Amino acid sequence: MALQGRRLVLALSGGVACYKSADLVRLLVKAGASVRVVMSESAERFITAVTMQALSGQPVVTSPWDARESNNMAHINLTRGVDAIVIAPASADCIAALAQGRADDFISLTCLARPWGVGEQPCPLLLAPAMNREMWSHPATRRNVAQVVADGAVLLGPAHGDQACGEIGDGRMLEAEELFEEIVAFFEPKLLQGQRVLITAGPTFEAIDPVRGITNLSSGKMGFALARAAREAGAEVTLVAGPVALDTPRGVRRIDVRSAVQMHEAVMSVASSQDVFIATAAVADWRPALAAEHKLKKDGSGRCPALNFVENPDILASVARLPKPPYCVGFAAESEKLAEHARTKRERKGVPLLVANLGPATFGRDDNALLLVDEQGERALPEEGGRADKLLLARLLVREIAQRLTPTRT
Ligand code: C5P
Image (spheres, protein in one colour):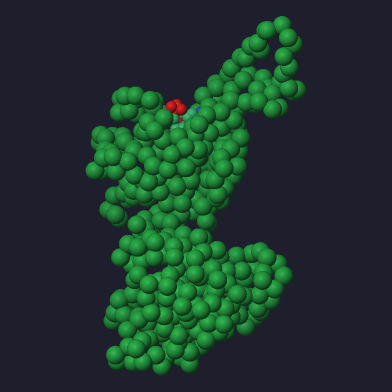
């Protein structure tokens, strides 16, 4: 589980977005975290402590005068040994109080009392701002946000969009699922910090006529999981995606393409500025030599159209042949003799690392099994054999790549 063993404080200041925090606490607990919820007086006007207690499975603290703690010092007890404090929603007032180092409500008191860098292991502070767009863009809020960030707080969002007040703009709190992803990402080791990573994903679609084409069963899930894992590891990620029905991982730049030729163009336009290139896309080897301008029609004679094919550009090989190529990782979807085909392919493509998997056992599925082939030999992921979730495999593969980039760092 992504947050197994993590201890978190989730603080709610007042705002309509409090309803999202109920979902967030569920996601955090489900992922293995132990969550102590803290609520301001105004948060209690939006959602009850009963709900948050039921969902977190732990008592909720709403006042600095809460006498249930034997030493009556909840602000100290709650912040010792925790992995992070997350304030969601973080209202304009709450951020102002943090910027000033105030301690007159339980949330600001708790944040001020948390270990922040002297002596004990610092306790990170993550803020999910939620407020009207005018409040968010007000110079006073700008100053306060700049101050809390300078003091070490990490901002999660806010998002742009419809606001509860009916206006549209910046200041909307991220959705529970997005906040959850950001919190998980925060704890991932930053093995690719500052590296530029380019990834291709999904199938390509090669047109026969304006309404038909040739494609394959690739879902794009492995490539999208890799994009998420690389971004979690601190990389600046560009994802070139064929036609797939998947949401873009947070913080990832996505370029949508359809055909292999378009994918080749998109990749080559940025490849030389990248540190790593991971080719997970199942690119069509051939395309119809000429796509018909209009829909091909049956003429009743029983005759079928004859298609002539031409070979598509090999994107991975083209990148590997650049004068200063990024570190190239290829994928091979095979139906048999994994290791043998992967070794041959690695050499043919001229790449340092080739990841083999069984096509029929990966396309469209959420789990997979990988075989890594490099100059040193072969190794299975997961190491213990069997199959694993694609996101987990992606994180392991990111670790493997980071190790190969700077062998001493990991
Ligand atoms: O040649 P084959 O398709 O088996 O090679 C698979 C690897 O090469 C994958 O990494 C795939 O993304 C990449 N590839 C490519 N361009 C092609 C064909 C495959 O980048 N035209």
